[in-house]
Amino acid sequence: MLKLEYNVGSKTATNFKHITMKKKKYPQTPSFRKLPINISLKDFNKHINPYLSRGTRGPKPKISRQKTFNYILYVLHTGMQWDQLRPHRNEIHWSNIYKWHLKWSKDGSYQNLFETSVMTLFEKNKLDLSILHGDGSNTVAKKGGKELDTPDTNTKKA
Image 1 (tube, rainbow, N blue to C red):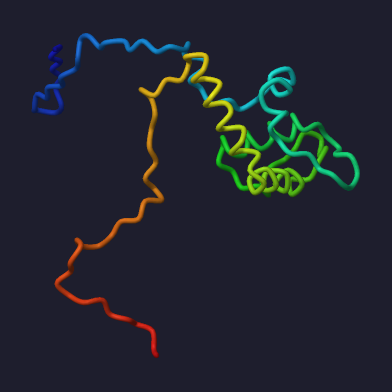
Image 2: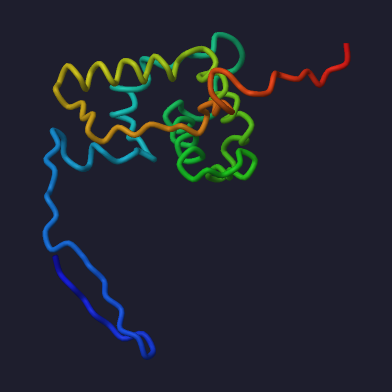
């Protein structure tokens, strides 16, 4: 350990930092561990396009599915509101991009894409579970144990 001392006013503070940190070796390069925010047309056609559903009726879309998918990734990456999305040269309205996102969410296209990509990574021995993070933001937190001292009360009128 490395001990650093520095003066803060009339007091001396100490800060401990590790000298050495072990580098973890992962089966894939660091570029594979980053979240994509822009997908090339070649990669989109090879890995993503086969798993997204297509529209069956109506006019042909104004922009390619790859551009639509990249706009969706941009909104999800930045966390912005859908109506704040400003497509390049107003080539398409934000609501149309949202409609594609909603369609692909509801019809299982994203689920199919995710499951297929996980299986592909597993088969190629590139699935790294050492950096898997669980999100508990939607986990129900029960109050109390199995048996509570106070009985349940119904607040609804009969």
